Image (cartoon, rainbow over all chains, first blue to last red; front, side, top):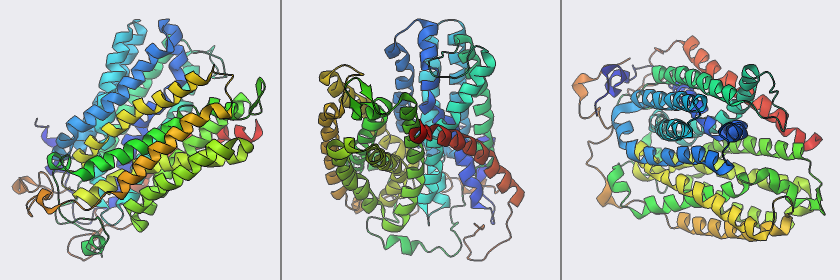
Length: 471
Length: 48
């Protein structure tokens, strides 16, 4: 599938002397927008009332978007690598924005299926392409600090929800004067439709800005003073390249898939239930020592640690290595989860501290995985391989809530649960983390038979060097 | 945070510093807005 020439990879090869620090804001411009996907709770109840639907029916919109994220990242990953970040970012912008606009039409005309199709399907495709679009470019621009580079971008995905939540409340307040954003208030469906139109247009402009400024390095480019041999000295790191089709035939890919699945499932176990969980842990009789406002504050604190973990832990992995940092995420995570299950209810500060560090590992796991893939499979089709690995996220998005909700449903009614009711679910999460820890331990360097011929590096530059122009 | 090349020499940057600053500001301002609001919400954990 060819792209218009102004979007093509050959048109955005950077001139000598290009400042690579223009690439992280290009990536952030995309990830800050698509991170909105985690801020949907702001208008969830408004849609329930507008469509006179159940929470489950409305929840399908967002579940569909996350499933489409995983599928589109897997399916379009190779296309993204072949055509470059500008084409991918522009395509993601069009899909993500169209998703909002079609969703707004669905809300305005009372047709829920249009919201499913708009936000869920179109928006979900935009999410998947947008999520992977800047990752391989960042890795190529920052071969000396790939963890820092991907950490910056994927931190933006966490930050996107932080921006979208207060912004959405403010916009709905402007479009519905009866809505102030206070707890218990519900905005009108019309205001949500207008919110969708506004977000769709703002996100389109913002993501296209990212597409406009993004560049790819020339094939022979490397940072000043950077010697690839210094990277090769670290275990597991290859200077060879493996194609996406071959990568999925290796045990390393599936071990890393398991690692990501386990890390995300365990994190979701807390994120999914954060507000009721802290209240239930400190419930005595019918009342909790933690007020609803404080529980909402706990959710905000977890968002901060989720975002910070993406940047801090991923950057740290550049120094201590990818395998050791996952040993920390999963190994220390096991200890923290056991602590949460056994002594977490003894003090609020202890509970908050344990949960915050666990969530920072959850974010760190997302941000470090592209650099881990680069180490194992090289840069050739790392975007496509990353896309395929993200199916682990989609699977964990289903498994995590199923486990925690399934166990809690067996323990009792929401509002009457106590700390001990969470223990079975928390110990299952410990078991999942043990599986992930073992999978990470089993990861060894990729066998030579999977490496591409030596002249393979960038997907298109090698094929069509005569058309390359520098910008 | 300099520009770099494959030759090992350090060529003059072809990217205006102002463009880099504007790009970072465009993503930084909304991020700070989001952080501010989240910190404000999170403070309820200690005060609420």
